[in-house]
Image 1 (cartoon, rainbow, N blue to C red):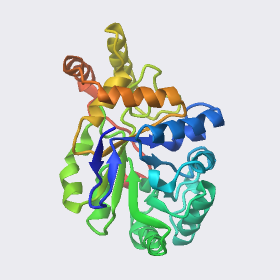
Image 2: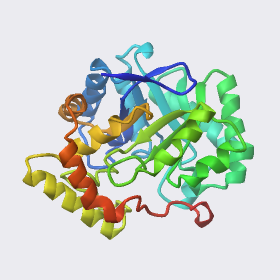
Image 3: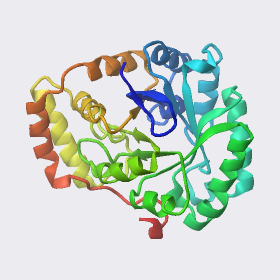
Image 4: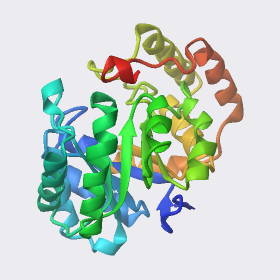
Length: 311
C-alpha cells in the first residue's frame, strides 16, 4: 500500500480508503460478521482511513463498524464520520448547532471510540449555506476544541459549493464524490484551490457508485439515462477484451498523485483484497484511451442534488 500526505494535517493516508456505506447494506443486504472481517482485512493490508456516516444504513454502518473496531488498536486507523444527514427526506437533515453537536456524541458511542479524526458536514447542498457557515461549522470547531474531533470537513456533490464555503470560512478537509472518475474529472479544476488552502482531499466513489462496474449501478442511482447507457457500453467493451471497467476506474483514480486517497466501499473481504491487488498493477493505457472515448459524450455529466439554489 502506498501513502500520501494529507493536506496540512501532518498525516499520511493510504491511497485506498475504506468506505463504510456498504456496512449499512446500502447496496445490498450484508452478513454482519463478513462486514466485520472486511474491516479487519482492510486494516491488516495497509488501509488506514475509514469513512462512514450515521446516514449509512440509518446508523447500521456505524454500529457494525464499532463492533469491528473493538479489536483494532486506535492508532492503526484514521476515522471519518459525518453530521447533519440522518435519512432520505428533506426533514431528515438538521444542520443546527444543537443537533450536530449531539450527533458527534451519538457517533462516538456507536463507534466505541473517544475521538473522531475527521468530522464532516454531510451533503451540505441540502442545507442553507448561511446556516452552515454561521452555525454548523462553528459548532464543529467547538467539538474539535473539546478533543472529540481532530479536523473539521465538508462534503457535497455540487463542486461549486466548495469555493462558496471555503472563501468565507476555513475547513481542514473536503470529501467529493463521483467527480474524479473515468466519466467525470471535474474535481481536477479545484485541486489547485484545495492545495492553496492546504486542505485534505478525499475522493469518494471512484467507481461512481458502481456506475463504472460490471454489476452496474443500483436502482436508486441518480445518474441520467444517457450516462448509465454509456457506462454500460464501456463495461461491455472491457468485458469483450477480458478486462474489468471497475478495475480500470479504480486504477485511474488512484494514479493521480494530487489526490491523496480514494474511498471505496465493500463488505466483502475478497473484494477488498482484489482492490488492493489491482491498484498495484500497471494501468492499461490503450484500454483507458478506448474507454475514455466511449465516455466522451457524457464527460462531466452529473445530476442535481439538494436545494435548487445550491446546484
